[in-house]
Image 1 (cartoon, rainbow, N blue to C red):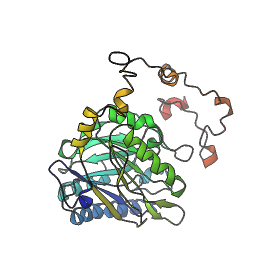
Image 2: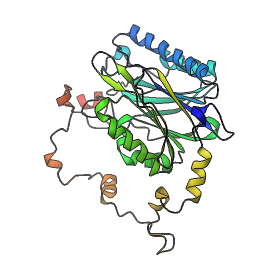
Image 3: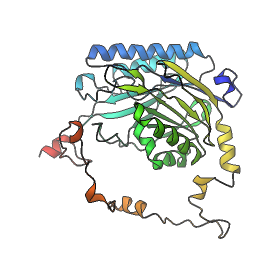
Image 4: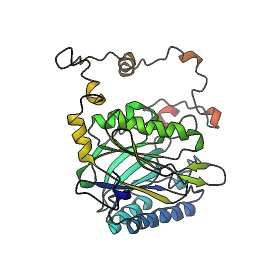
Length: 338
């Protein structure tokens, strides 16, 4: 169904390219500027590589690498030169692009931010990672929800980032809001390989949704990212994947949002996202539409607590070298200092 990696494009197809970008080491503003130009050049490569490509997707940490450095000198803003360069690259190459930045936050730690820019250079999707990979990542928890947009050829498109995809609630929320294609960008290293694979497939199958997933690739001299670009169809089958581990390779495939819509309308057995809210509709009209899940009620009420909560040993970032935080979620640095 991949159309030979998107070479043969159908009328209803969307061709996606996943860039297994070489993992950079970014320490200074000059490093940041050089990596920005590397990404801009890769947008051009994607367009030259496949004229049918609609959307090119860069991994999380494509711009900043895996150092977890929160130095303000190398943080980005939505009106800064890095995002401006990405806008120009999409406009100049007439292609949609998905990019990763670490976004300066005056009220706390930086945000891990993903953006999608259309082929005219306009930002269409703006997302802040909801679930930083604690305790390793210092990023502020996201506060923009999970936006869903009209993407290439009108396909409903969402973006989540790395660890987000380990929570089934994330892909379910994206699908519930209409996403037919969900992007998952990551910087994962080799120990996560198996988890990456089966969560990508589960996220697709459980929601009748195409997922397009990609990690950084190669080594920066300390960390080794795994690449593992993977495009998964709505039935959980893998359409295309990066198996060589070659840095800067672009994994491509055509996906069919129209077939997602068809499956969501026509499937009876395993139409799970519908059946979640219509339990047992064979027995009772319309199915049970209650909420029998204790964790959902407790989370909404602000009393989420595990039976083994008191035994959990890692509850802040100190094992990864970060200071214990004293600011509550929603407070800004100035408020916490008072």
